[in-house]
Image (tube, rainbow, N blue to C red):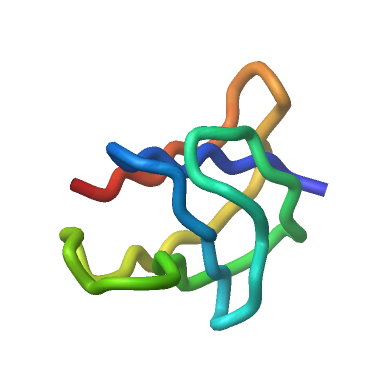
Length: 68
């Protein structure tokens, strides 16, 4: 398993490949590989989506995804 941290100014549901992964501003577990991250709810954030290859992460060195 790999680790990703998705940040946003408020608590929102994080979607990975269209499926619920968890909440923003928390370290989340995800399978190794290519993923497309978005947020549920209003589309009041940028970028619209983040595509990333998640690999070789640790709980202390997670992949960071930032939405504004």
